[in-house]
Length: 102
Length: 177
Image (spheres, helix red, strand yellow):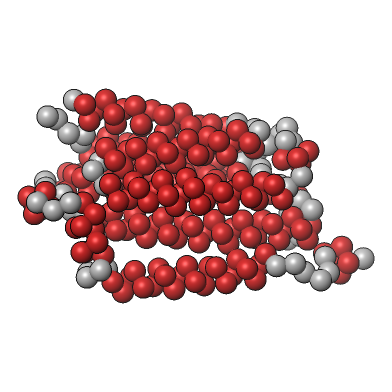
C-alpha cells in the first residue's frame, strides 16, 4: 500500500496558509479576519502532522495540540476585543477604525 | 491507494471551503465554510494517522471555537454584518505579488527541508503502541514544562478575555463629546 508522501501534506499546507494570509489582508470584517487567522493556524497543524507521519514521530502532533490550545486563547481574546470595539465604537469593519489615521 | 483517495477528497474539500472563507461576502456563509474547513482538516489528521489530534480538532475547534464565532456574530447587528463591499479589492491586487514571493520562499524552504529529512526510522517503536498512548507518554515526560506553560497561557487568556469583554461604565462618545 502506497502512503501519502510528505510533499502532498506540504503543498496542501502551503495553499491553505496562503489563503489565510490573503484573507487577513483582503477581508474588511473584523470577525472574518480572525477566521482567516484560523485557516493559517490549521495549515501549520497540517504541516506538523504530515511531517510526523513521514518521520514516524509524535512530537509534531504534540506541537499541534499546543497550537490548538493557543488558537482557543487567541479566539477568546480576539473576539473579546472585537465585542469591546463594537460596544465602544459601534463599528465592526477595519476601515472604520481610524483613530490612529492622520 | 485507499489512503490517497481519502487524502485527495479531504484536501480538495478543505481548499474549496477555505476559498469560501476568503471570498464569500455573507458572514453566515463564511462561518459555515470555516466549519466545513475545520471538519475536513480533522479528516486529514485521521488520514495521517494522528487520531488524538484529529479528535481534539473536532472537539475544540469545530465545537468550542466555532461556537465563539457564532456567539460574537449575534452581538453584531444584522444589517452591518451583511454589508456588501466586504473586501479590500485594490489593496488585495497590490499585495498579491508580495504574497507570491512569500509563497516562493516557503516552497524553497519546504524543498530543502524535504531533501534533508530522514526517512522514518522510529516508526517501528510507535507501531507497537497506539497513537494516543505514545502522544500521552511523550507529552507528559519530554514536553511536561511546555504543557504547564500552555495551561498558564490559557488561564491568562481567560482572565484577559473577561477583563476586555466586561461592561464599561462610559462609552467612547461620552468621553469625546
